[in-house]
Length: 134
Image (cartoon, rainbow, N blue to C red):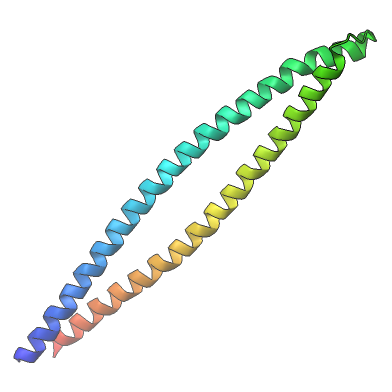
């Protein structure tokens, strides 16, 4: 009987440890994701905002010159800045898309790990129930 209670205590200890790991892991993972999303969103928002502002600011003189047919000496400079800012907006948007897809893949991986922990918890609970029935 003493041996059975030792096994039961060990299984109970493992069960509690697994539950604590699951809780702490999910809380810390959510907090880390939240912080990274806030930081990434702020940085990308500022970058895209500034580049978009440059694009729009220098697009107006270009369209005005094209519509009126009056090409001023600053036309080439405005065109270069407008094209560069547009290219950078596309590159930053592509980077953001890649980061989002990589983040989704990491979440799938962590979900798989969480499923393994839940299975281990259920297995320990079942083992404890079996020992208590005996």
